Image (cartoon, rainbow, N blue to C red):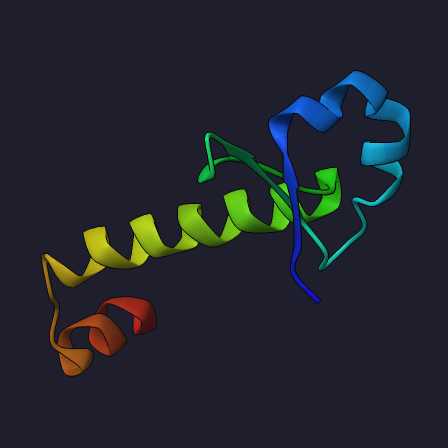
Length: 77
């Protein structure tokens, strides 16, 4: 279930924050449009770790690349 509330509901932020759970973010709207997302801190940490992994994979795709035989030969030394 998607949890969407107007930003004005922040006046009663304790109730609002009690709705935020893992895998259940809270989306706040302002003037009828999406403005903010509130997520559980564990979900934030997972999101951050996933983005870091994607950044590392993108850098790795750029190279440099090494031939397997060359790497294996250097490991034997």
